[in-house]
Amino acid sequence: QVQLVESGGGLVQPGGSLRLSCAASGNIFSIGTMGWHRQAPGKQRELVATITSVGNTNYADSVKGRFTISRDNAKNTVYLQMNSLKPEDTDVYYCNTKAIVYGSSWSSDYWGQGTQVTVSS
Image (cartoon, rainbow, N blue to C red; front, side, top):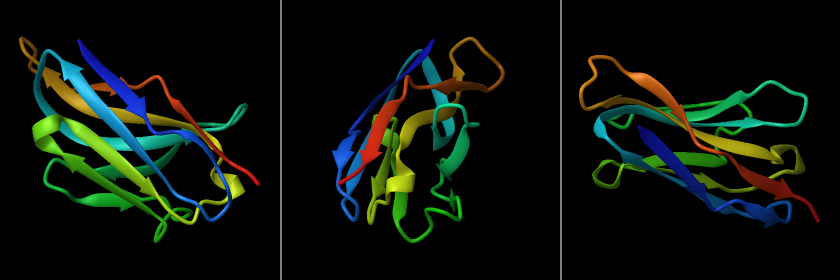
């Protein structure tokens, strides 16, 4: 009912930058908080950053001052600008959103398929 398509991952050298994008589409009535999580093989998925529908943001301590989350409500899109990347930022990054679809009375969680970010020299 809601599809999330991520883009922008890739290989970057330490100290470099990447910008991730995630566009939501489908039978959407409203979108609430959007966010990014990341997960390494064999580890739990962890929160990177979230942004509410009115622009309030929250960041993991490990990315504060380096990553910036933003959104374009008109496009149902969330972005993650990642600067000063470190090898430990290497992970699969997943987009997440809470959304209400037409015909429903409650919000549900939706996830993207993930995009690989590799920080290596």
